[in-house]
Image 1 (cartoon, one colour):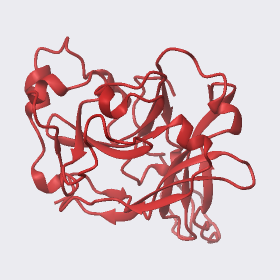
Image 2 (image 1 turned 30 degrees about the vertical axis):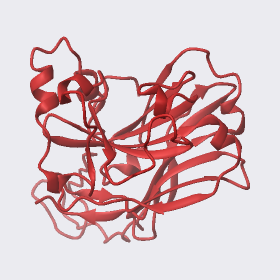
Image 3 (image 1 turned 180 degrees about the vertical axis):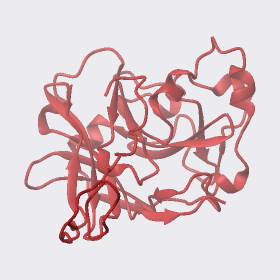
Length: 275
C-alpha cells in the first residue's frame, strides 16, 4: 500500500438464503446448516518492499482463537547491505489480519547519518514507527497546515501516554514537531540519555499528535542489528487508552534462526478498552 492509503475496511459478508432459516423469496427448502469456520491462526505477512539488497515486510501472529499476539517487521539477511547513502522512508501496511490491533502500518526510516540530536542519535540507524493512525493522517502532518503548531502543542492527557514518557525539555513543543511523524516523547526516567556520553544501540520512543497517542518507535542502529542481538523487554504502559484494540506489553529484537531475518516485534498483545 502506498502512502496516503487508508486503513483496511471491514469485509462485507452477505449470507442471504443461507442457514436453516427460510427467508422470503429464497425458495421452498431450507439450506442445511454449515460447519462453523475455524478461527484463523498462524503468522500472516504483508507484501514485501525492497530495502538495500534485500526486502522488508510486516507481519501479525494470531493464536488458535484468532486473537493477535504479536506484530512486527522482518528484514531479510541482505537488507542491511547496499543501503542508500541518503535518508530513505518506506510505508509498509500491516496485513489485513492485524485489523484488531492498534496498528495501521509501519513507517521505516533509514538514517545513514543519524538524526537530531546528533549527540544522542548520530549513528546510522533505523526508525521503525508502528503507527496507530492511517497514512493519510501521517501525510497531513506538515508545516503547510495552518494549525501545525496548535496540533503539535495539543498533547494527550497524561493517562493516555506510557508512564514516564514526556516531551524533551528545552525547545517549545511546536519546534520539536517532525513533519509526517509528529511529536516524539522520551523516557524521562532514563538517566543514560546524556549528550556526548550516551551509547546508542536501541531505544523505544513514543509519539503523539493533535491530542492522540500515535506511535511506538523502536530506534535501532545498523551495527547493533548486524551483531545478531537477542532482546526482550517490557514496554511501559499508559494508564488508559483512547481507542479499543490489542496493544503490546513487550518489545523484542532477534534473528530468526531458520530464515536469518532480522525481526523487530511488539509482543504480548492484550485487548484494551477505550476509556
